[in-house]
Image (cartoon, rainbow, N blue to C red; front, side, top):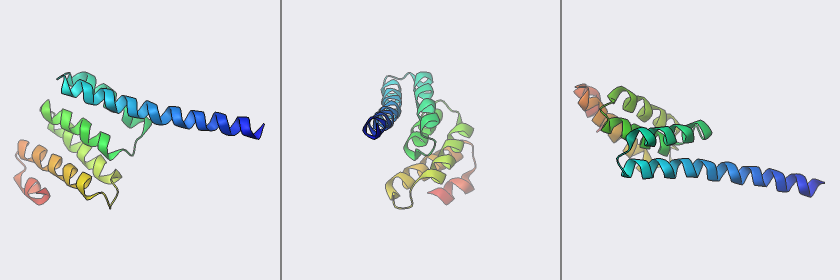
Length: 116
């Protein structure tokens, strides 16, 4: 009985991990194809499944940036910065850059310069 429970539990965990990964990968494919609305849908699903994914917040924010949705891009950059590990300097830098670009586009140059 204990073995069956562990097997079922592991199966559920593995399924959840791959589901998040699938949503993220499908979002990347949609973005690469220029289908931004679909990319946002997949990235949003991934965030729902994994709300602490700084990478997904960055990716969705980048899509918003490409759609000139600067307030949404700023929001995702800020959420990503809250989620990113302090040790992940590369991801942190990408999120600051995203935020700086969005601030530049909204003509808040002071905030943009602070992030660069």
